[in-house]
Length: 167
View 1: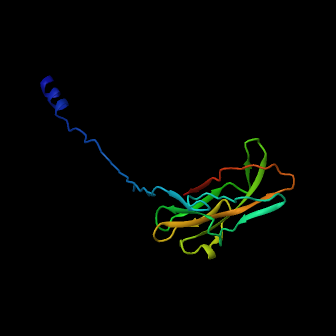
View 2: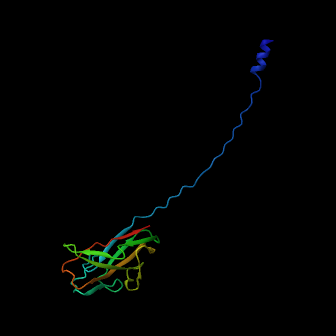
């Protein structure tokens, strides 16, 4: 009898364990933007620099970015149709001589999607949004003015204009 009891205990039906499962998924996306390039050309020296030349005290020298062949040209290259932000030394830039005397340069920047549109390019303040052309280009021209007050020390005054474009 004991063996019969053991038989029933060991051969009793086993309960099936219930299993459930579920799954989820996610779409992985990455948007790759091409590297940004900025090249400068034009300007008073052909290399993209502005040179106002000799300026007499108590006068103002100007290079108009829409009309002057002395305006510096910056060519921006990246992805076609990309929206970007332009930032630069604004609203003024200090120019210094070797003795620490200073003058103030007031930049003027205009821009267009076409390199042949300097005369009709629109004004671009620092922080302005631009959209690159279908070929992935945008053109900025730099000009500006320097006022030389009476009594200003003679010498050569220089400063560095910084232009940044970013996505």
